[in-house]
Amino acid sequence: MRDHRFAKTWRLTRFIARLDRFKIPVWLIAFTFFTLIVPVAFQGLYESQAERDAMAQTMENPAMIAMVGHGDLENYTVGAMTTHQMLLMTAVVAGLMSILLLARHTRGDEEDGRIELIRSLPTGRLSYLNAALLVITLTSIALALVTGFGLYALGIDTITLEGSLLYGASLGGTALVFAGVTAVSAQLAETSRGTIGLAIALLLGGYLFRGITDISNEALSILSPLDWATKTEAFSGNHWWPVLLMIGVSVILFIVANLLLSIRDMERGFLPARSGRRHASFLLTSSLGLSWRLQRAGFLYWLLAMFVLGISYGSVMGDMDSFFEGNELYQQMLFSEEGYSMIEQFIPLLIVIMSIMATIPPVMAMNKLRSEEKKDRIEQLLARSVSRFSLMGSHLLLACMNAAIMLYTAMFGFWIAADLSMDEGIALGTLTEAFMAYLPATLVMVGLAAFLTGVFPKWTSFVWAYLFYSFFVLYLGTLLDFPEWTNQLSPFGHIPQAPIEDITAMPLIIASLIAASLMAAGLIGFRKRDIRT
Image (cartoon, rainbow, N blue to C red):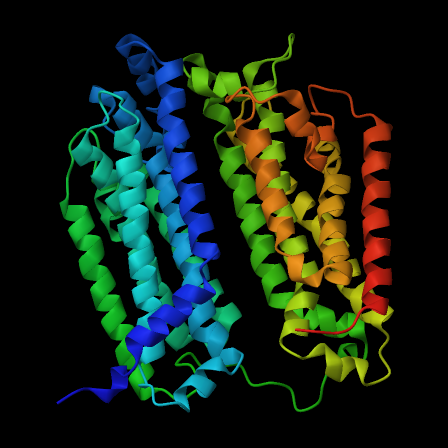
């Protein structure tokens, strides 16, 4: 007898695939591009096996093992080097992709009332969840095939067909595992934000657990799903059992998610929600207080994440001298400046990366206004004695404060860890000056988000593409020999690279004026335009 709980699953699969017809290709193209440029760069930088062996020796220290895991250092070919240095990091991003895509179509659509509407039609109780899982599964398979065959198409001798397909399968398998984690999290948490927070916490927790156990007790690393990807040893050992393990765990998690969904009520979760207050706090009497209440949990999560990020980068500073001795790749990525050590030249690159990462939460804080608008919530506020200027201004003020706090938190975590790991630490004042110099660039991104929200609300996603562009050209531009003007298209490319360059006021003033102009234009546009979804 046909199980009606899965009725119309295939039709809903096509519906969800159509909704994500732009997002999924962007993810796949980005993965493929980054996967393919790395082995090409390695082949150009390390032309002989002797150079690759020297590079392998620099990776035998606790800091590098914690960051990228163990690798086949005895047979350090271009393929093995690619797996060792890139697979784990890429697997983390693959997990993040699954979390973001699936959370939207589970708790996200349930919060917005879409699933209730769909269930009112002749569809099964479990159809929408399984349709979303099917889309993620097909996306993971596409990711595995595109990256696998793309690597093999490079024509590098040590990048074999089996190793290439195994590399791609590792990424696809990791994406499947965290799709299962997200599906279960969606049944436990009551909100989309809680689902994403729980799943990302498990993702980052798995990475940190693997890093600690890889150094202290490697046998325990197998408990982390991210360790399974490194256990494949693509292009050297070529072990397929971790991929089978990923598939098996994914199937179990998918089944658990279906079982939990079949016994829970709509808009409820298995984790008990905290009881709210009988009377609202006085803070909720203002638009600023309401904006803070909406963003409080996300702010605290990101605060912890930025502190951990700073500690992670700072903890490796003590081993950098030995690391740079044989690592031509990172030497080529640095800002070349005579009279400074490799560590001093490495610090600006780390600061740029952390500054761009610190830009994510304030931009999210600014985009929260557009999210509330799309859910038809701000009309209820504007119907009362709340002005548009006050409503948008409160989000903008919180975003600006968010930017400064995130930068300082990342800097403080970096300073603490670097001071403990280095013989001669870095002065707190020097780091504070170097990090906070990027605040105007961060505010430019916040201003762009405000401008798009106020004037072109349907294009608010553009700010993420621009932020990604900034990361790409500043992180890999030197390695890929991009012209200097590509850096200048990003606000981060105009900031002096302290501590190897003197910080001058003019670039910071110009960036601040641009940020202020964008914010003002956004406020004016928001006051004049129609509220729409």
